[in-house]
Length: 217
Image 1 (tube, rainbow, N blue to C red):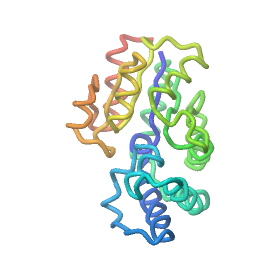
Image 2 (image 1 turned 120 degrees about the vertical axis):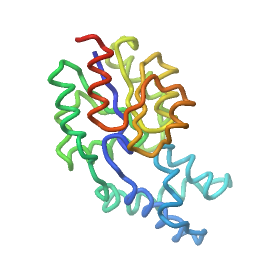
Image 3 (image 1 turned 45 degrees about the vertical axis):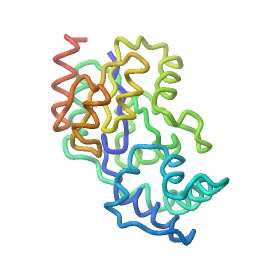
Image 4 (image 1 turned 90 degrees about the horizontal axis):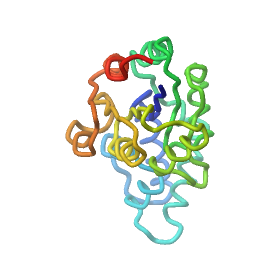
């Protein structure tokens, strides 16, 4: 059995880094700069979508926003991040029960790997999947489909764990069972409406749901 995990809002809380890097980009562009808490909706979607909503769809505006965002994120922002309490233990519990773990994130793969290395989580995962810096495979369904094909996995034997509707929608599109985590940035309503098979209040609940509903491995 296999479990895919989202990164932001599921394994770690990236709010400070993401919101401050967005504010940095907006300030450099002379655009209105919202307060940090007003940008929490940006945690989950691709940067392209977030900056198009913030800056409009004029040619090149989102791309310049992303460039300025990464100017700060690549050196400071990616480390303004905290692993949720209970996550390492949950991952270890799943591995001990025989599950193979993957990361499937909309964050560029190069940054995701650095963040996992920084927090000592890399060894718990068989492989990390994320889009290229140019945005290729930034949609969760496309990313999961690619991962399943690359690894030769049966979707029916896989789970997706994430905190936003994008994670749940991607799982449903690819035939994976899904768990929406309520300690991240998606609401109960968002995750339920997206069709999450199960909801988890805490990381330890993820372990309990998967081991119970998988019927052993």
